[in-house]
Amino acid sequence: MTVASDAFELERALHAFVVREARLLDDMQLDEWEALFADDGHYWLPASVGASDPLREAAHLYDDRLLRQVHIERLRSAHAHSQQSPGRSHHLLQSPEVLEANEADNCYRLRTSFVYTELRGGRTVSLPGVAHHRLRRSSAGFLIVLKRVDLLHAAEPLPAIEFYI
Image (cartoon, rainbow, N blue to C red; front, side, top):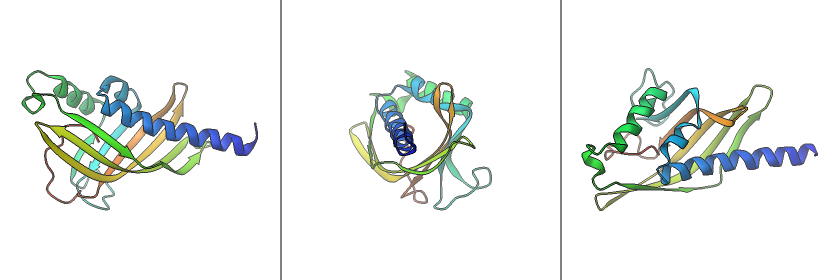
């Protein structure tokens, strides 16, 4: 293969990863979605525009593996009042932009604009934003080190968001 075809294949694989992640969320395949995270991976939903430190600034979510698993189990629980009847979500993605593909440092960063729509209890909520993925490659494929979701409405009062965006 040529350098150009290698770069094209890498970009295609990175795009496919982001699209697959959104599909797993929309299809409520939460165990498969959780498996996309590195053991030290985090999901961050900042509560302000331009946030830079999830440990020192307010966040709607800053979940490590344990917190993601707790959240997932709550979504599956028959006692989760907000999920009676179960809600659904849909991600509409722009084409992911590869910001960094540094194979030497095993660091891959992507930026994807999206509109997330959630249907719950007959109500629809749409939230536009940008997802930032920082990935690393493993023997199993790419893994999420950090998924940061910057909502357009991050600093505004938000409805209760039941699902991962």
